Length: 369
Image 1: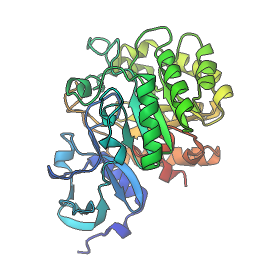
Image 2: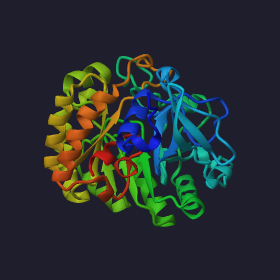
Image 3: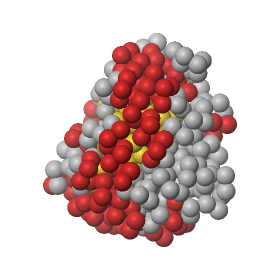
């Protein structure tokens, strides 16, 4: 039998498989990792065939993955294996230089913001949510409180702290954009106010494209305020495609219906531009491929980029033992979605800042080509 090598896989197939199965690693792998937090997490950053991606490593599924990584050498090089057969060399990128610094008030920079993918800086400005403490309202996949409880971050990053870290990340590590997300602090502006203050301070300190992410605020005038504060793109994340799945998996957030999101998207796109408003969709929560693609068609028609990623069950959440989507399911969504985006001339490479531009949590961008 011929054992396949790294070169015999298409890049998108291998990344899709890795992000569905996860990767078994040793304890001393090093590099860049993320545990807990508000969004897709329990990942480690790897570079494979020149592409930097986030791959689940701390999940229960990853411990059973057919993919393994050998202990890396001093330069971060490791052998990727599938079922014990070597496929080729991957790399675990070293931690960025800005991680070694502390703010003027003594907080390590890595507690303020983290490097995602190759060159995207990301932070959760407000590290809690009004729904998180009550499982009757919280999103069952969310671990926003875990990193705070583990002392890996601080509860509220001030505009001055964010500006200081962003400037250093650009100057020391060549960061090219930044994502500012937040837990939902109230039911009125839903975090837009804290994001606007943060964006304004960062743009005053450094020329860095920014994406801000929050639930749709009640007053759509916040979209113009966010734009005026320096935000280049906007993320409002549906998470699931259908209202029934949203009500089951995220009962509190589902009170802001799909229709209300659509109204918010229609208000925001003229201000930010076509393709500069994005929404996160977690494939594998219960929506069918057809459900996701029907929603994506509506979003693209509005000028919204649907960033579809495989759901990663995070340890310590109610869904920690939930099965992630299969690689075949992801391909059944990403292949037609890539065609839809290509035909609409809406591509991740045109996004000025944010998760869609980074693309490390999904192989979607490879299906756009």
